[in-house]
Image (cartoon, rainbow, N blue to C red; front, side, top):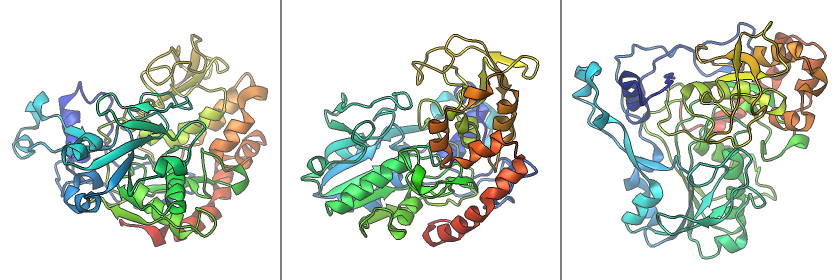
Length: 440
């Protein structure tokens, strides 16, 4: 995966983004992990020269010739957000000859799928919006209200808040629902929970779904504790590991195949797969999938730092380096040499420890991970001056999907011991996962 700190300020790095996100499956970096990792790697032999150009990745939404006939003369709803776009690929051939002279005019361009389909005469009646809203501007956990899209005038129905599942009333009159959202492959990232509830509602009302698939930037490994059914929530609906290594399309097939919709239901789905993609293909997201995942570094670190959401530790919310740093007033300068002060900003109106000095670590130069790193969490707990309040037990359990991880850390288990306790479930999941894959 390409690490991009500021793609719009560095034209050479942005060129790499263009190649990978909007037209290339080039693999640019090695994958590293802690030496005591017991995760399941999809493939570690993925290092290639940066100059090697392979066939372009083509996301499902771009393959309009494959799904416009399906939508013809249909009453359509879109489940989407700011990532639901159709790319306009630039002509890369002259750029390859002289990388040092990339001009701003070569930046990737795109149109929102709603705008594009409306311009092609598709009869879109409404939009369903997930967490963070249709335009992706709401805080994590913030209520997303129903409304109207200013640009198109279409009604927007929230699937985050009181009603996480489309009601029969909101589905009445529809012939088909299109699902197109960029995911990051982590269980507590709520877009796959939205997928579950949309599939369930469509199955109950005999409405087919069209899923436009997109790459998973964390698809190169499987790791983490497996969710226990008693801890199911919107942060995790199904018994899967924290890092599940599936695309949205593949995951939908698993939901159907494992009968997770309940009452023997299955949803009638048609998937438009990504072309020229495998689970070990590096993929750099050209649009942040949510306000607090601004770049590839944050997306790669998110599975590891997301645990901090259930603790007293701030994981960079209220800064411009979300999920690339962490810290707390309960950590000390004697143990941590990095400090910052969270302040309200885009995506974090009320960040944890707002206005307080937080001591912690800056992880922006961390090599690309292919396993969950527990060292940061365990070390922070051991060095916290407020261990009694370090864990918000309810929140941490919902993020981890189990009570065991908090107990293991508090009892002093080593990271090797903790990860070994995940191993049997990971092996079972990996075998189950193979049945539903669309990509190698």
